Length: 530
Image 1 (cartoon, rainbow, N blue to C red):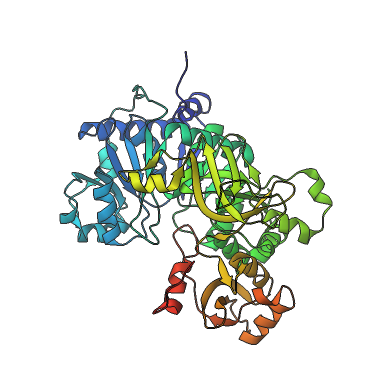
Image 2: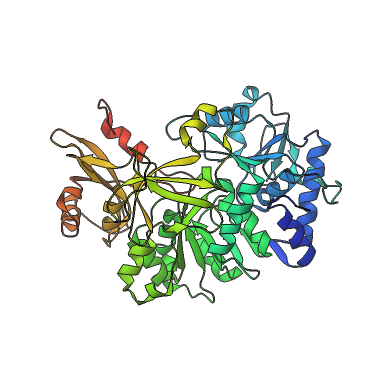
């Protein structure tokens, strides 16, 4: 009588109860839940017709389009495993992942075909290529057209027994310091994570959800499943463009979305932002890097967004913490509210247990907002491990706890606040300096568009903070002016000792700042201890 916990069952429910409701909006295309259900079934039957079986792996490299959303259901509902690919990787990375993942087929947009064409002879295990967007882009791959692939295939439901503990996706990490690792996610873990998405982001039947976050990243943080569960409407966004996002807010009545702080920053600094008038107040989950309090405050005041800070990692499906917002916080000043909303917060309801522990003995830190430890977690959403990498798995999961690598403090009310990734903390003269704390102060300067603070070598102190700044268009700011701005607002030892001004900062496809790339320039010929 017990049915497995799988997010695929939510599609069955949505088709049953909301067959004529719009499920997916992709530019001018509209699909009802009945149509969406039939298309995903056709994809399943098409893949089975070329020999893909339960347990086989199918890689997908698509933007946020209806085809990408269809793949999450069409591949996995007959027991195959989806391998979503970050389309911004190099051809070398693609060759490694496609071979390492044991994928037998690749569904991709013709827009991204060039790097695959370059490595075609290096990926012999890929027997089939299925391509979208051939009306817009050309490819030399010997490939099947996606729509032709589906055409004429059966659209009947798939009846294959699913074990809730079997893999549903393999999601590869960004591989910033080594080869990408394949995170093995299960049906149960995705179900529980999506339950947290539903509950804590308050997703409901009438929601219109905009996929600003790449669906390949931790399965859209669970949004690919949660919106279907509620019978809401998915709005696809092929590329992140602030003007387009604000247009969709008004045109489609977007009520919910998720994105990294860099996406929020793009939105609030878009010229169109000051004139926008919204009929609904969108709820936006943000994570990926600690959002500056000043940015949260600006998003809420200028755009009317309700910002909900969440936290997690690919290895945890990804959600494990959220900044709970009790009514008593409403009596605080706007600055105080923004400071609290910048915290990662407390455990979500369905994921399991999370705490901050001391590195020397694994005991929980004091709840005093001062003692620094590492975030660890265990429970329903932690990965099964890294695919074919038992040593890396053992290094990450110890005594049943997953070690995040994020350093944090716990405030007296139990709210966790990240100070830095362990590799990003600055240790200057024996003092720990949180780069995100310094960035939070810098973001309050009206001329600053983006900021990154890193450690650079120093003969006296070992290392000191350096600020790397992108200015708003038309703004001016000198190094000394910014340093003085910081010295007026925080302890002097934490302030940047130097400033560089640049045109852009290196980021991942999901908006995460790649500080390791910034550090490389300054640490050549020097060995950084921490």
